[in-house]
Image (cartoon, rainbow, N blue to C red; front, side):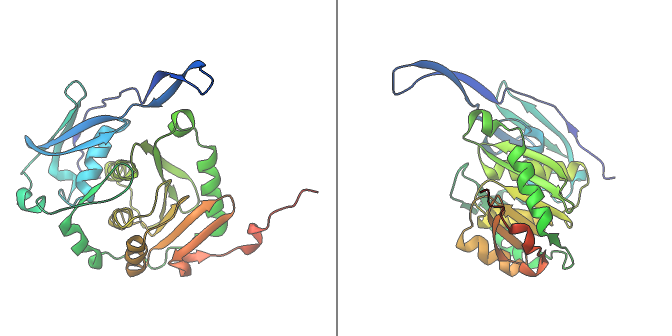
Length: 280
């Protein structure tokens, strides 16, 4: 087991109650997501400000550093300390990040909710990523995953306006579930938890409520995960990257419907399960 950094456990309220008026002039109260900024400092150097719910700020920070390839090993990090009073997280490393200015100077800003960013050099690493060729996913397991997400208690059901991501085993067991204002934050938080728990991705399935953009596909590949599922769709670049990686990309996963856009050879099809019983 790799050495683990010291982590705070800085919890905050994830929703806020507000007063609203409807089209008939009626006053009521609803819950909305409590979005807040979190500025990341690495060895006292300001790196980035993330907009987040704050449900797992330490894991989010760790996963962000991992997915941006700014830190190669969890053992390089001494501590991650979150202070919500100043809306900041301080990351302390043992030996610093080599060439951090150069490595963070070229940034590609991605589109979509919870606007994400990838440091340009990450795109150059795609060709070097190899996913396990023997990983397989049964159609029945895919349906089990979709049904688990459907029944999962969530901030989205209470307040809306958030994205959710989850990691499943090849047997369909949910290992992690994270919600945040953007899918980029949620996937980074799961990456951080995987690192902390020393969980590999080679036999895992990743689910997101958001689009499968190139950034999401690249992050999934960096986590070593061969299967990406979404209730939404994908982008042209997300599809292109997935095909080059041999990753299985499954979009429009609702009920018993799905579209396999790439990596179809990894699926163990059970077409009889897709039959819908008609009620007279």
